[in-house]
Image (cartoon, rainbow, N blue to C red):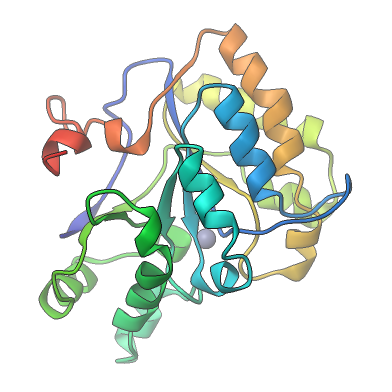
Length: 241
Ligand SMILES: [Zn+2]
């Protein structure tokens, strides 16, 4: 079931983070900037961290080979719609929002556990009416959990837009995280709407600086399905896993 209100990570214990990466997948050969979903997934796996990749269907179609690798490495593959459009606008104009979700669900269906699909809406734009419509009109092929918002956003995409360094971006994440000290972290392993930002992406380089610093400062990492939905229930319990 889609929630009327977005799910969040505010009940995570202090110094606990849940990493999420939006708008991928993508791959770039060589050492230059650009999307590097598999390298991010491998590095996090080496670090003992399971992240969630909220993927855009139009990017999955061109990079299908990435999904089994991420699944094998123990990461969660989530649904971030097919075309990354603004859902409230589509809904207001009476356009099809169902297919935006089901097309991506079909693409990721082999790489999810227990028919459960974690969902984040593009731009985190949502309304209770959208939840009602989806819950009424979608068949029960999958158990949808979401939409998920985030507590920590250091606007990594602005760094890629301006061609700034991974060091500066990592520093901004560190400062932002230390203000909140807990929650779901939003990063981007690619960009859905801008080729320029996508090709300047340095998220892999950023996390290689950021993760060791966070560990030094005593931060721990939770999977998205371990995030407490309230003071008591964790998502795993909530969905009966
Ligand atoms: Zn997005």
